[in-house]
Amino acid sequence: MIRRVGFGRVLAVTAAVLGGVLFPGVSVASGSSSANVRPLSAGSSHALREEGAGHEELLTIDRLERDGGDLLREGSRFDVRAGFKHKGERVLHKKAFSITVSERLSFATEYSNCEYGEEVPTSPVNRSFRTAVCWIDMRIEPGESVDLAPFALKVDRWANDETVSVADSGLGKHWAAPGVVWRDRHWGRGGKLTLAKRTGDVPPAARVKAGVDLSYYKLDVDVDSSWDIEVTGAALKGRKGETVTAHLAMDFHGSDVQAQHDAENSVPFARIRVQFPQGVTVLKSPKQCGNRVTKRPYYQCEYNLYTNSFDVPMLRDGYHEDFPFELRIDDTSELTGGSIRLDAPTEVLQADADHVNSTARITVDAVGGPDRTDRTAWTVAAGAGALAVTGLLAAALLRARRRAD
Image (cartoon, rainbow, N blue to C red; front, side):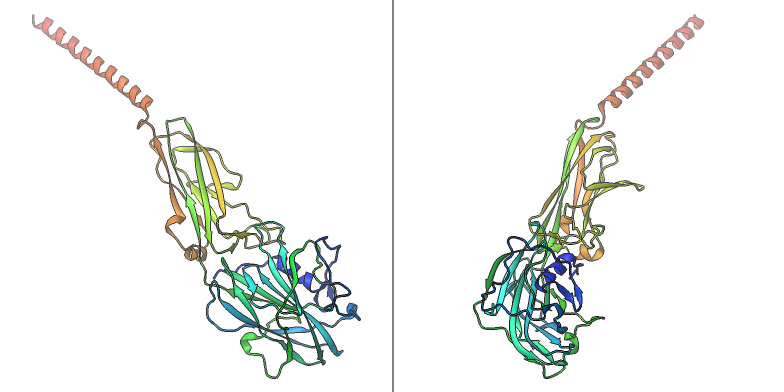
């Protein structure tokens, strides 16, 4: 699987359900909530007293794993286990935990002590997340470790590299991060998610390996999936000097992939490389295509999916991008060797499900064959030369006969 860099959106969603706290003692800038965000009602049976919330001690997450080693596929179900250690000094009685999953995962079981919601992405191309905030009453002594009961998740269609984040989200306000809007807010109707005191050690593979104490952590979930980038070439016809348009394109098929590898949009998942026959001149190129000056110049094209260091744009099934080029036919004897192809790191090229459609030809046929103007001029010149030679030979023969007489 090709692992992608997670940008600020994951952090923002986590911040929303952490009640404004990411790390013990470190606050996140707060702002007015969206009109679509509804806090817990003071009269709700789920609302908890926020006594001393400003100095609340958060548990340190020290365990996060998924059960089973089988590679997941669409429709698979799996359990996630998470655990925490109380490194504070006060006895705790109530806790709220948040579970956030990327959009191609869903909660297989919903608990009655958990409130669920789905983030509304700022754009349809951006990745969204689902979150559950679960309220649990339990006495936790300083130095004790506790584990959440395993909770089940399901792999949905188009899943690829997914994530699960678990956090002690504190007893403050939830669902209220600036710029994050939620939909389908509801409480579960099943049994209750429980918390139990840990009796043994955390398996080595499940230990959270962080340099500092964190109240939340993220688990990467690999899924057996496939994707394909298809390119479309062009077959053009025209006379010398004529202008033609090459309607090139790319299409994405299959499971989601993250469109950008970094927050500066300098490392896209893939690019498209376009090389035209030497006998044509590019008069106009798409704005997302740049000319690369080499021994044989080519164009490098990108799709219009960019991050702002906060959102995570995705290449999704059905995504289409056009690359129209305006060309002039200059030399009809140099109209071969044009192509459009997928341009990406080796690991991306190898992961593409269909290598055949990753390359396509760009052909230009000269109407009427080779240039007629040049050929006609050459024929006229050759004919005139032949007539001149014939005239000289006739004059020479005439002079020779006169001398003989």
